[in-house]
Image (cartoon, rainbow, N blue to C red; front, side):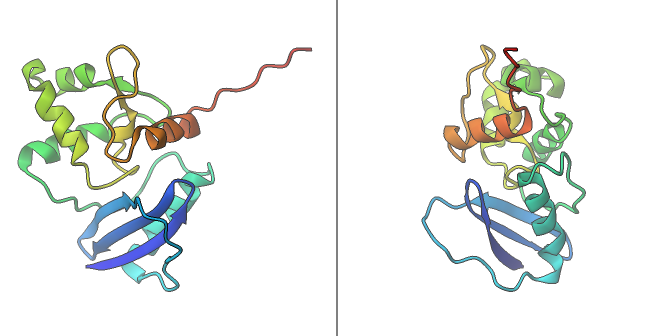
Length: 158
């Protein structure tokens, strides 16, 4: 596995992967200026696409993904990929789409174990009442990501 560290507006981002695909994208909760000088070839596309996303130039990702998880987690993460850029769904809606409303806690838990920050958009899942709940990267980052994807346009007063 190769690893690269890049700066993002939300902190240092760690990207790990190999020829089989990108396995982990996470944001670190440490203050560090240790960004990678050399990006491994297998990670260059992911680095480029994440930079484009943060610049507001990319709304979807075209990467070979290889997240590691249980069969159930894989099913939940695959469903997250269907949430369009700039849109949100509730945990209950996500659970209904997966076919078992009694599994809401398991679905929320799988969302929380999503290893591919931003690319598998678990930040687009919110509480039924519209609240920002449950985000492994922290609610301030979830809020930033949702605002980044759906900025409120200032209306002209004149």
